[in-house]
Image (cartoon, rainbow, N blue to C red; front, side, top):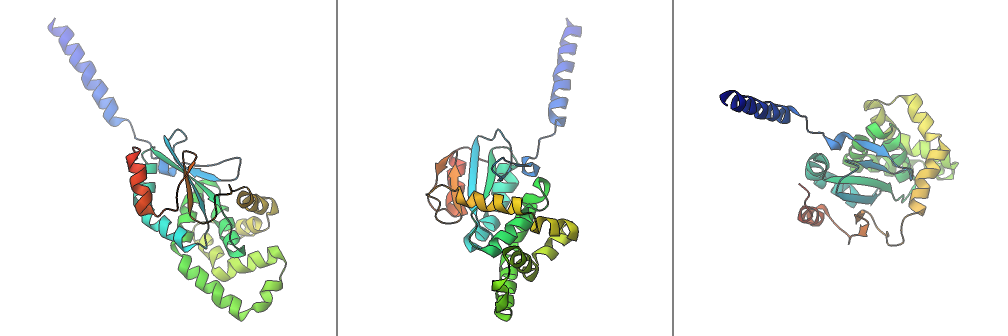
Length: 225
């Protein structure tokens, strides 16, 4: 009888040790490319699926990225409760260039590159404004040439090189018309109600224009932690 009890205790202890040792997956490091061309970060089975239509030249989008990061990305997405799908809503050619750079490293780099681009938005937009004032003739360039020139003027190529991309890779991304057309199509395919950025859908339902301060309680009320 005592031996049976001891064996039972040993089994419970072993189970507890295994449970404690089991690693908790960090879903914030998992990003995948969808057939639509959008990137989604987080648990594919997350109960809360957030879709953001955003623009890299949108100041409100940059504010959302900065204000939400510590909770949305580092807690809610990391825990597996929320996934975030980012869809491009391109506003201008500079925005397109930034989108190409964010995507240039593929799924493994997209989330971090996108966040870095938003974080430095004021700096690289100012560079382009100054450059355009000094080079009005650039507006007459062919579309792909203008895209490369804008990315260079912004310093986005330099930023991506500092983040591990080669110049060869960057040049290839800027010349990839198929990928560029895919980004533009994402904008063309946006639902009619998407008229501003950032714009959100939660589990398929359109949300009113939101800041992080108003979106966070909505997510928490639905169980995000």
